[in-house]
Image (cartoon, rainbow, N blue to C red; front, top):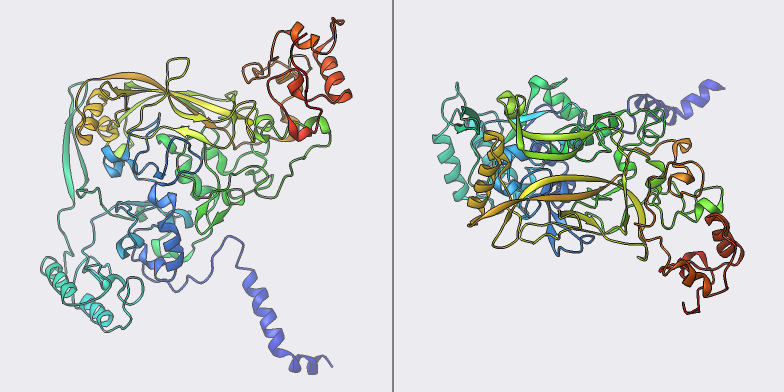
Amino acid sequence: MLISWVKKYWCVLFIVLVLVFVSGFVNADYVPGHVQITYYEGPRTCIKCHESEAMEMLDSAHYQWSGDTPHVTNISGKAGKGDVGFNTYCGSVITSRRLACWSCHAGYGKTPTNEMTLGQVNNIDCLVCHSESYKRKAVPPHMEADLNRDRYVDMTDFSLMSMEWQNTGCDVFTGCSYADLAGDSRIDIVDLGLFAADWLGCTDVSAGCDYEWTESVTYTDYLGVTRSWVLPIEKENGDFEYGPDEDTMSVGIVEAAQGVHMPTRSTCLSCHAYAAGSDCGKRGDLGTGSISPPYNVDVHMSPAGEDFACQRCHETVGHKMLGRGLDLRPSERSEKMTCLSGGCHTSRPHETNQLNYHTSRVACQTCHIPKFAKLNSTEMARDWGNPYWAQGMFGGQGGYKPEEIRESNVMPTYKWYDGSSKVYALGQVPAQNAAGQYEFGVPNGDVSSTGARIYPMKEHLSESAMHLATGEIIPHSTSEYFFTGDFGRAVEKGMELMGMEGDWELVSVHTYQTINHGVEPDDNALACGQCHSSLSGGPVRMDLEGLGYVLKDSRSTVCYQCHGSQEAKPFKTIHDIHVKDKKYDCSWCHGFSRPERNLLVSQTSLEP
């Protein structure tokens, strides 16, 4: 009986066995089907099969370092690090060597443009996000005619070009491929001429295309010490080329390409943990400790908790990420990211109405991230006037960094935030706050704003140079500072490159940054008395009056709008009588309303 059944259904049984076998080797993070890769030719190895994904990535903020700014109210159009971006931590890409800024850029060395060209598409470095093993370094650029990327031009390359020339339906992504040296969507005599020129310049098979690609630069620093660095030659537009750094990789480059996977916390944090040049330096809630944090530090990312990959919350559509910090300019998605976005939480997540009343005006992060910089210290201020020598810079050749004033286990600042912000862009005149600091990142919203919530924030202070004639901030050259440790020279170099003239002065600059990572277990959430002085669980950390929770007039005037003098009672008692019992809206006593609570709105004046 069994034998006859097996004979009859052997095909089905075979398929089931194959699926069971394969499932033992495939998990949710592994992307199968790459074992056919036997030679790595740079990003085009991936893009040959993933053209549509490359097209999506081409227009992403991760590649362009710029994008649309729908949630930044003082910028219209596109903006980002790659063009008008400038912050309280670093200088500007446009006045610095690209190599000094692009160690984390998702490109392969070419300056990104919005042009849909083969050169731009093949500049997208897929392995930066899709391989934990991958490491890279600056390498000699390949000649365009070196079609098989073996470092010299010979008959093999000519055969490849000839085969492509014979293809029909040639376009920039399929038929022509990389043999279209002129980049004009066809292969013709023009491409052959370019090929011949490269061949003449690269004929030594034993040596490969061994041409000059580095230069020695010499600077005298602020102490009068003269040093030299050997660096890749950058073209006039900043282009250079990356390549695999197999000496620092745990596997060979072919094996890394074969074993690609979906982005992990490790791949994301290989860049984001080191923003501003040090571990946990910029964000305060993201460092290398976030790769595998303890449960009591981050319930979402801890392997002992939810063990979320970053994209579980930062949902991705077409390589466009959901979410942004208030100090960032581009938003890849028009939606605003909240704790409700991923479908994990509802707008009423608590067991009591008293707590659920808070969710429309208090962000989840405010109560559930009581402190930041828990595993790594974070930079709270930067002093460009106090340089120190960092030997690890420029591949171990060393360079100067500014002093970082760092702190650990920092209590956040609390501000209203409606999901939009004002972020400084080059060419603008920054606003000045009450402390005399010039603001680079400010949340929009207040106690009366629709959709605004109280959020936890990091504050960062630094100094920048203000152009006295225009009031604009000068984009100092970070690379000039790295070589000299002299901030004045960095400013002058930035002015030279921007065509600016005249006097300048140092001014204090300030930014707010939202704290979103590091949600702790429920038992660690803020107690009521940490916000409300009349309740237990202090000490108080939140200035509710400064956030707008004040009476709209004197106590006697507010009280007399309804009744005469009454016996003094504790705040909670008075609040419960008016809100819980009589159902009065906040506007009876305060200068704001809470319509979502469906309370009785005040119809009386303040006249006693």
